[in-house]
Image (cartoon, rainbow, N blue to C red; front, top):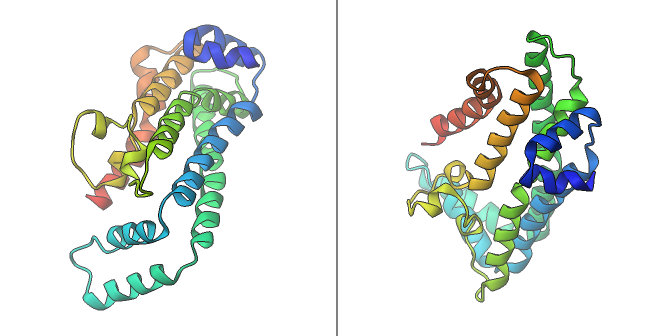
Length: 227
């Protein structure tokens, strides 16, 4: 199992063969979830409370069509909110959302693979998705480097993603969705394409279309409603 941690980075084909033979879930899932939770906790616990609330107010009232009464109500609610409530709610959200998204995607890939007569169960695809999420640990490590090297307790969310495409290209955007797209995430997507291709023997084009369709729909929908 621990060999997969190395091979998913250095020799993906060998890791995919091993995962297909013996799908494992808990180790990669725990690493992915705990790394994401740690960054969330680090953001709330190492940043200034006033800065966090001011940032949240700014994001929540960014809609130009919002009335002043609505802005004042949101600002009052957020300023009166206990920081521990924010920590708990964000942690619970990560603990629920990540496994849920992986589980739904595994069901989708399992359904699509059966159309090509590949008899692999939901556990195989869930395992593959968990292991291909391992590159995300590097993104979490980069976030912690930012937090630990900050001296004033005012690290913005976008600064926590130094490996994001937006940051690396020097682009300016306040869109949270675009800010979250990192090189590590693209790396993970590429691994999913490779794994699906190896397991189903579908063409590279078909493998890309099938595996990336959920991401295109998800991010496309979010961008449509937020831009």
